[in-house]
Length: 145
Image (cartoon, rainbow, N blue to C red; front, side, top):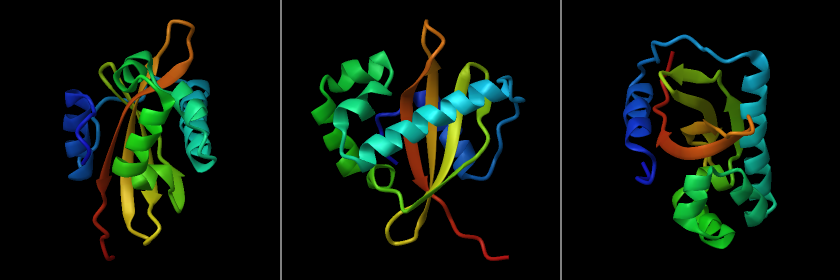
């Protein structure tokens, strides 16, 4: 799992990857969930178009400060987040709210067909919009039924 995600996101990721669910109810309205999903979808579309500037625009101010330029951000995603950069498929799961942490969960498959779970920590901006504050990915075990 890439390590630039926030520590609290890593803890939630570990719980979710081990099969535990978040205990808090979803405190967001349907419109907010749609807005959050639209941000993640737009960033994925920007990656697909190799539009680093647009992809970078969906990152939170703190994430932008960390990478400083769209080029550095895109280079990091290409190397450390290959499944996010070029997912073969995506399935958006409901948003989870755990305390003040808002997570958009996305199941993805890579080009080899292997399943991944991406957890996007979302951050509400002062203007009410949403941006991506962190992303953690982990491979999902395939369970036979």
